Length: 324
Image 1 (cartoon, rainbow, N blue to C red):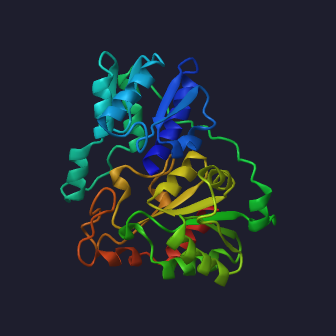
Image 2: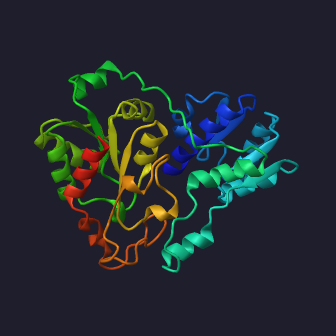
């Protein structure tokens, strides 16, 4: 989810700077709402579990896309599926993203601990190779969305600032311990409306039990479609998120984001759009020198499950107060 959300500010800048160029975005049906307000963008759904499954399905997809008479292809994903599509697009110019795998490997191995090129810049590089310079220095963002009365009733309409909190991530090494996060929520909820975001099932149950024990905290996990979630996030004054998709959704909507990092690190290039290192709260790398243990957080050396706990609730609370 995060990778797709990170393309949005780049495509918005492209559409504004090249208004006569038609963009067709190929993505999974779930992600259509991400592109809802970008001019000159048509979304084509890749049904990879349906009619576009497997090599034959990709051949069918390529045939359907070629009917749109596109001129060039910007591959912002560079995975096996897009490489197969590239083969079926013979005769068309394709530029694939350079993900910097070698330098990311050096970062993870501890050979070079330094800021790598951001993912957003890597997307810009693809368009530049196709002859389109994209300037990200003065971004514009969509207006705050109207929120459905159903959710306004749940959240409340008092004048307190809204803080969104998304405490979950794909891997445990990227998740701030829930008991410490509860301390953060308790403090922030004294002066702000706190809205919890997450997926359904287990995440929703955990967040529901926290919300029911604290005043001024509302759980929306598992209740929202992606479009509804975007509507509410666009109205936040601040999002506090792990290194995960919600951080990038908030950033693409122009919302200030504080990210909390465990066994991953912003140097790999995944800071939210238009944010710098000052927006990140990091685990103690002196105590856990192998950070980042991987680019995406899926590797956990022995003992590193304690890395996130080196961040104190006060660090997050103080950062939130600074940002507000």
